[in-house]
Structure formats: C-alpha cells, structure tokens
Length: 334
Ligand code: PBG
Image (cartoon, rainbow, N blue to C red; front, side, top):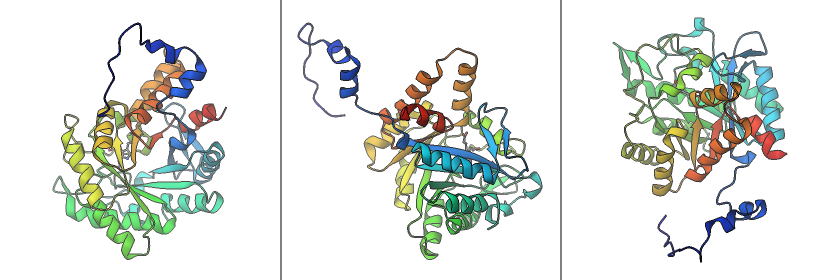
C-alpha cells in the first residue's frame, strides 16, 4: 500500500509489455484463486427427499443428511477445504427461544456426525444464530418486541457447544449480538474444546441480499420486522473496524465480512488494519443475481464467476464462502 511508485513515462514504460502473452500474465499475476480458497455453504433440510431445489437459488438444492455427506465427499475430492452448514427445519420445531438450536440430536449435529464419520478430512463450519430455529426469524431471543442481547448469549454459547460436541471444526457466529464471541469462547474453553475455531461474522450488514437464503432456510416467512438493531448499517465503514477489533479481543480466530462483492472496500480496510485471516461470504443475493444473468445468457458463466471470486483474493481474503464452490473447483482443477 505504501510502496513508492517510480515515475513512469511513455515510451520508456509500456504497461502492455507485461500483458502481451498468456505466460507472462500468469507469471506476474498478483493474486491467484485455487480450490483451497473456497468454502461451500450447504443448505440442509429435515424432509424426506434427498434434494429439493430452492426456487430463488437456481442450481442450489436443500440437502438431506445423506446428500450432505455426498456433497462433503465431492468437496474433498475437488480440493475444497471446508463446507458450512445451514439448516432448514420443520416449522413445527420453531419457537420463541429457538429450542431446537440446542437439540444435541437436531439436524445440524446429526449431519455433522455423519459427515465427520464418512469424510473426516473435510473441515466443517457451523452457523451459530437462532434465526433458523425461532418462530420470529430473529437471530437472538425477542422479548416485548425487542432483541434481548445478553439473554441471547447463553443460548448461542450452548448452541456452539452442541456443534463442537458433534464434531464442528469451526463455529461461525452470524447473530451479531454484542459479546457473543466471548461467551462462545468461554463455553468452548470450559468444556474441553480449546481447538475449535471461531470464525466470527464480525462485519455483517443488514442487507437486502440475504433474501434468497431466507427462502432457502425458511426464515423469510417467519421474520417479523428487520435486523437493523443488530446487523450493521450499510452506510458504515469505521464501525466495521470496531466490530472486528472487538471480536478479535474476545477470541475470534478469523473474521468474516458479509455480503461480499458490495463490501470489498470493507475487506480491504480490515486487511490493512489487522493481520488476521479474513473471509467473505458471497451471499445468496449475489449468487442469484449472477446466476439469473447467466441463465438468461447475459453473462459468460465461467469468466463472470471466476472474476467475481478473484476480486475477493485481490481485496485481501483468505477464502470465500460461495454457492459456486463446486463448479469453480472443477474449472480450476481442469
Ligand atoms: C443469519 C444468516 C444469514 C445468512 C447466513 N446466516 C442472513 C440473515 O438472514 O440475516 C445469509 C447467507 C446468504 O444470504 O447466503 N444467521
């Protein structure tokens, strides 16, 4: 960032020389994208069918536990280091405090155990938040129409403990309650899970681009109001640095910026300020926008997707959560 740029003038300097042939372009590339940069988000469901298409995410299916194990195997074979699990549970299991979130035999723990038994070498990341389990669709507990911050922490810590106990390698709190990383870290330490990592959604914005995901996990129907009292205002950037600083101080091993493409400036600022692995989530709305244009024949599939993911590496990410992961890994392995 602070490198001195030497004075360049034409014709002594010609930028095009270094772009003249494929081999030299490859040689001087400042960043590269490999399958090792990808995390594949899997949407789970507790229905009977192995796969159920998600209308708002063309090309993405909700998966049974058996299908998720198959996906984990595919990820391993493609060189994708990790999958991230998101559950769509039966509405009948949802209540005000998200009781099902801490069921040790729930959909996520059950799928975790199945994946770990069949594909032990794949990393498994779980989402810590109550929105998939509450009848109001919020990430924390609600009392008198308000999100109760401190009262939610115990539930979130218990949920993280349940995931760790079932074999999660990484727990990823996406709830945006204050103090949740500390509560989770303490619960993990106290119960013998010192090596379970915390990837905190530190800079998570109140975004319109989560719409298709909420359909996919079934929280859209439920959501009362919006998430602006806990997710960040898209107008803000300094605030993201404070959130990252807090989560690191509380024990996060790595941080996430979410959504991705519209927040590359935030990724770069976090990169310039902290020396810590950064992940981006190319969220459902970003996927849907691109896939929609690809399906309409308006964008070149491979070039558009690879360019969008390369941008995250250029901005400073260690990795990207993307629904395109298996497709991209196949192209990169060719
Ligand atoms: C919330 C959560 C969200 C996503 C993952 N976990 C967003 C939300 O509903 O607030 C979004 C992922 C996506 O859009 O792809 N726990």
